[in-house]
Image 1 (cartoon, one colour):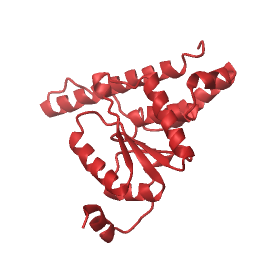
Image 2: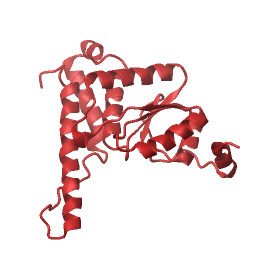
Image 3: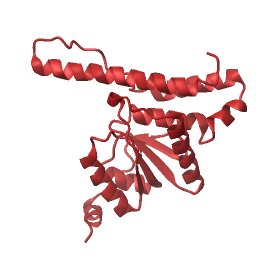
Image 4: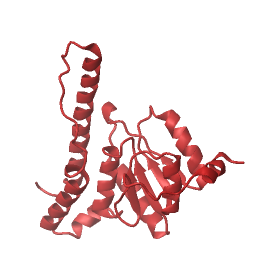
Length: 211
């Protein structure tokens, strides 16, 4: 008996966890899924998953990849590491958003996730939400500058400023406690990395208007 069938035998469906948020009829965003989450996502119509976790998450990748294969979910590994300065480019954003639209038009749904679903996932989901999978150049050319600026602000508010993207706070990295010093130093590195990644994202989506 396949492992996934054994798991199904003893699993009681609970419905999709509220940690997964619907962006539209084609896209769901959230943190990396466990086995029970994958079952619920499959039941919700998800037929492909983008995993944006950084390259160091290899062990977790193989677990998710295996169960996605068993469930008939297409698993797409697209790692980014903000701590290493590896951010999505305009072409990355555009090709992934276009794929989500095409998959949706064919009757499927896509899940975006990273680790917590707060940073890399937020940028990818926000770009798709802004463009709907269309070319951003085409979207801007068909929209007056004021309406485009309003739409950009709506997307930023929805995916970042009203969410947990900026929930970390600078901590004292010069404390005497060596463990706390390491922990706080890492926390501060994450803050700087996510701020730089966000600045890169904003630059991409606002390049079509003289702000």
